[in-house]
Length: 91
Image (cartoon, rainbow, N blue to C red; front, side):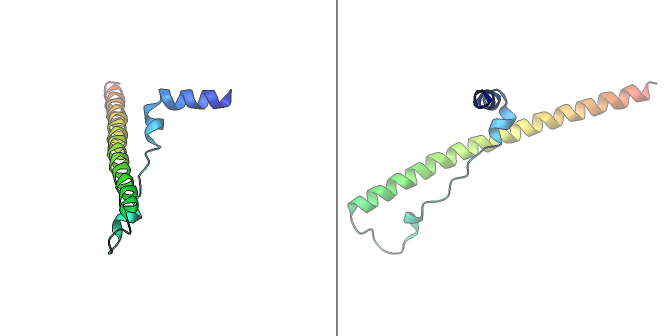
């Protein structure tokens, strides 16, 4: 039951979901100074680089969503602060 509740919470809460952006590490296989030993090794590294590219793109999207959520929250905080100030000013 707790597991289902946590999953539901993560799915329903954008700010919580964005807290888990995964920053992928660059594949080590692409950093060598020598040629690949064979085509299998080159193909395997190509797949790692392609996966890295896709994961990095997703990481960027996740970071943008996280930043947009922070901006929305901060804008709401500013609005509430102004309303509170104006309320006190009119007393």
